[in-house]
Image (cartoon, rainbow, N blue to C red; front, side):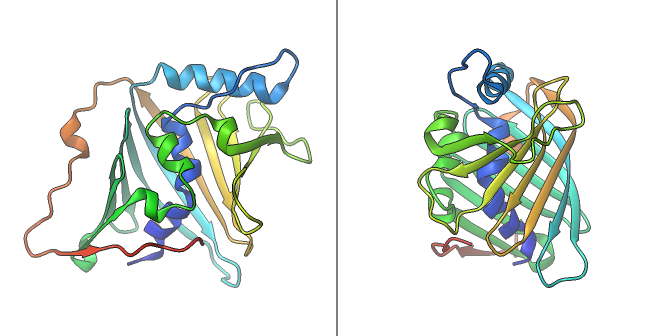
Length: 230
């Protein structure tokens, strides 16, 4: 198994926000609550979503970052397909609590449960569209007051039920559409995974069979163990 699916697993809490609901009652004059409300309104109107992504993972101790790119498909409730297209093909399929990692190069499929492969229940609840962001995360402005390309404040998310070794998530919202434009995952070891999304297309009527994975002939199926926190 390569690093890319595991990097995605560790970042799943951040990425799935984009396909679920960012909840939280807005308060007048509160820039965090105001922005969260606008993002929530956008995604509540989104039944399916397709986007291209570019990923850069900087690993502490390595001179060069790991770069990859592909396309993500999302359909509420509970369906996700993540296709790495560059530099090699890898696919991830999620339906509710079921997750499948397929790496053609290795002729292997890894089957597991999302709730057993994530650090908490928050990613699963967000994926299913039933979680409230403010029930699982402390959402705040960046300490330096950083803003994104469109001038909106960049948000910092930390798990409320996580310990000191939990990752910090940084979210940049597109000012024109209020979809997520960039997501960063910062772990306690100094590693950073950055996902930048583009060419978003919403409510195009994605078919359910797009999210169904059939194991190819001759491919080994492996049951994933319960994975520890990164």
